[in-house]
Structure formats: structure tokens, C-alpha cells
Image (cartoon, rainbow, N blue to C red; front, side, top):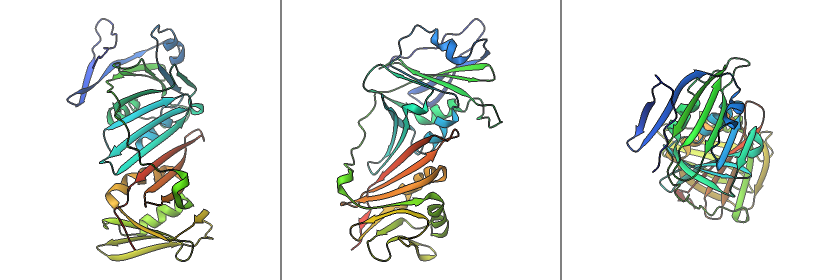
Length: 311
């Protein structure tokens, strides 16, 4: 895979931080600049297939943390925005959707631009300034990708200091198609996230599975665990004030491995609403509505295959 080294001036050193044997991130040391990041990078003559800029890098890093349960992520960019996919054992898939409107600049020169990158390394780079939360202080980000074989280049600026990171990319693998479509959805509820957080705090997380029952009649929407402390159930009435939507066409009970669902609690912690859907095969979709620091809306979705169906 072709790899470009950042340009460095006399006396500067390039630091290589290996995460995996085949991947490196090259960081250009912090240096003072006299021009804003956006102005400085526009002077670059390189032709990028993708350029995405944010005034606050936390708006990207927070959403990526919500799907970080494996090292590698598939980035897919279209004119509508950026989709980041992480998968585990062909049983679990997480997608983060960041619409183009959320970026201060989003330029794509092809209908589709895709690459695979080490997500852990990317998050390390995004927090290179320490993730400052001081009022009025944020890290600006300009993310650039030239195309196949080139690294993902990050320009990060905070307080007039710029750091440039170049992260090796790989050819993206084909994401799993769970074939989860709206026409096959049998049951759907939308809950306030606080209510689901409360349920998880009361259920026994030593259980190997989480059982979800959705029904047009009682118990309507029930979460069940079978752990060291015995069986536990958490019921939601369909007219609960925590239930924004209740649409169930048939009684359906499925179990899902708790180990697969636990990564989704990162998205739950950030979200304000969650949509729970099951299709006619028992596949589960969890869609989380997340507001970023600027009040803009992003979405995180988890797909999980059923462990077993309960008659």
C-alpha cells in the first residue's frame, strides 16, 4: 500500500506510532501558524477525493466512540455525508451516519469514496490536543483523502497550533448485508433513552442473553435477563410517557447475546431517543438519535442477529 510521509522542516522529526504491525500513523509535530487552518490547507495543490471540515472535532470523535468495539472501520462517503461501519463476527454491525450538513465543508469529487482505517488510531489523533472542554476552546479538524493507496490526512488546529496526522488506509471490505428493510419490520417502538438506561441498570447484566418481547397485547414491550440473581423482567406499557411510538403487529420473543449488545450502550449513553425494531426473522435494529455539541442530529444504528427464537 502506498504511503506518503508528511513534509517536515529542518530539525523536525516524524513520530511513527504503530498500533498494528501493518499500520502506522505519522504525526507532524505541533507548530505555530499565522493563518487559520482552513485558509492554510486551501493553499495545498493536491487534488483530494474527499475533504471534510469541522469547527469542533469532538462532534466526530464522540459519534465514532459510540461504534468503537473493533479496531477497523469502513468509511463510505457520498454527497449525502459520511457513513462509518464497524462489524463483529458477522453477527453485529454498527453504523454511524454523519450528514454532510453537519460539516462546515464537505467536498467529494466522486459519487462514492471508500476506505478502511484503524479506528483506534484515528480517535487517538482526534484527541491529540487532549480533547479540551474549556469554554470557547475547541479543536478544528480538516480531514482529507486523495484516493486509493493514499493515507487519510488530518489537519488539527487548536489555539493557533496545527498538528498534521497521516494514517494508513486499506481497501475497504464489503460490509455485511443484513437485508434489514422497512417492509419486513414486524414490530417497532421508540423510547426515550433515559428509560432504556434505567432498564439496563435494573436488569441483571450477568445474563448471557437479553430477551426482548414485543406484542400488540400485554406485556407489550418487555426486556428479560436470566443471570446469577435469577430472572428479571422490565415492562413498558404501550401508553407509557417514555414511549413515543408503539407499533406491534404480532407477538415476537427473541434472545440476543448480551456480549453483542453491550457495545451499543456507548451509543445509548449519548442518545436522547432510541428506536427498537425487529423484522420477520427476529433480527434487531437499534437506532439512536444523538445530538452533538452544537445541537445537530446524527444517527447511530446497530444490527444484531438473534441468538435463538423463543416460542
